[in-house]
Length: 98
Picture 1 (tube, rainbow, N blue to C red):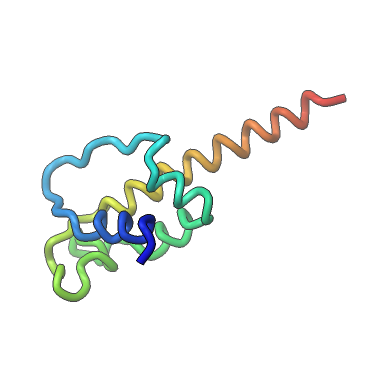
Picture 2: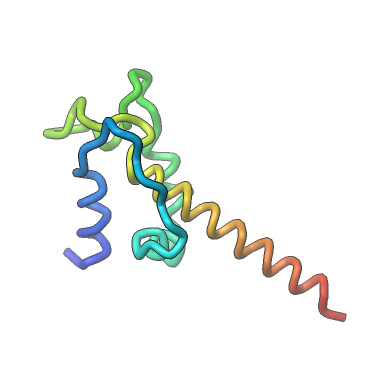
């Protein structure tokens, strides 16, 4: 397993319950998600299962331990914001050019 996949697995296995710390834009995990176009897919997968738990993170041995939004959702949300800001900057740059 490569290092980036290991980091994503570590996030999925972390415990929740207290307020999650803010996810910085320059997080290596956010960078990995942006570079690989993962944000939208992960946000579509990591959704509330109707009981306040993450549908994906609460499967298997971790069942019942991950509240939603899970940390993967937090990181994917930040990655989507980074992608949108980059797209907005690109649009502004092209509008400025003659």
